[in-house]
Length: 482
Image 1 (cartoon, rainbow, N blue to C red):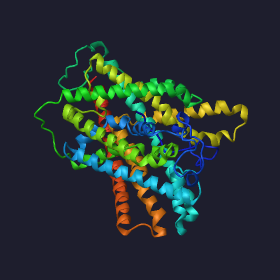
Image 2: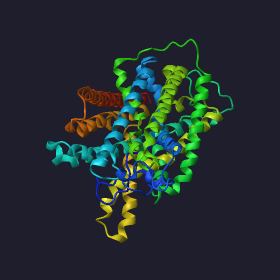
Image 3: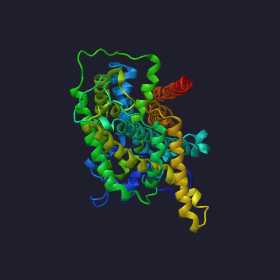
């Protein structure tokens, strides 16, 4: 139940190296084998690589994270009818773009005789197909990798806000936590003992997360990662159960949301479909890569069903009071307070996995310029500064729903919707292998992603400024009253 990234190999010294690291490499090392043209889609010996079921599980992990918990609010922003329909359409487009990425990677890896390609490398070789872009092909790879770094650091910011909001709520309701799980008037945990601002909780988490990212090898975290995934799965089952059993009829909710709120829906939804980065690493690690497309369709069908069902059911259950994460609406009984704590543990462990990619891309070039005796302290210092940076961003924007929407609009829209159609045009159009309708379709998808990026980013930033201004006014008013 953790988000993953787009990469396939460890960095070896350049900021945008041909070999980009991924959390999948640390927990699931790549098997040896011949290049793609030689192995004809099958690993030597038949035992190396991941199986169909293992790949399916990794694909599910790569798409199900904090974004899923924010979808009920996304459905509220779009409307009870328009929201699920939009999620279905976005799921279809996202799967199509994943399929395009795999297809282009196959074609380009055979053309350049490479065993496999990362997302950035695929964009680089795609640009080399166009004569007037060939000189600037490195920019294609660097741009994709830059958005990957932004996305991963954005996930880390979201995790800080998620952890602080949920733990703050558990602490505030601790004295009144009971065994009765009845909903209250606002359908969420009652705040009976006001505590610190959520940003202070982020600072409390900072030392623990710094120590976590000091882990020298992510394989040491593999057992904890397995436990975290099981905990998050159990938490989701309990959330589904509670939401289904507490829907109130008749349901009087807007079928279509306000137009000005739809960009926030887009940002949250595209953030949830965060798994395009894991597509190529998973396909490259399969024992029989020709089976990956069925895995992709099956896995993303399950993911899309979960998104639509939890988004719709959560909104139907909690209505206008739905929070940035559905966990914030659960009642203050021991069962559902435990759900929040279990999910927080899973997110805490996942932080190290998400942090792995930007750390392994950004830190090795610096260490290469440092004397060997200073490399360990410099490494730890840089990791500490990167965590502090993500924490500082979270402190500046302590609104979970808006942080999710902003990260989705800014980076996920490019990786999931804009780049793959452009890559197909670059790969096949110069060779005359792309029909005019396919070209028009690709342009339309990229323009849709660009429109979502512009509107989603603008509305999210506008809402962030508005909420901060409102908080400052309330704080100033309270001082005046005193």
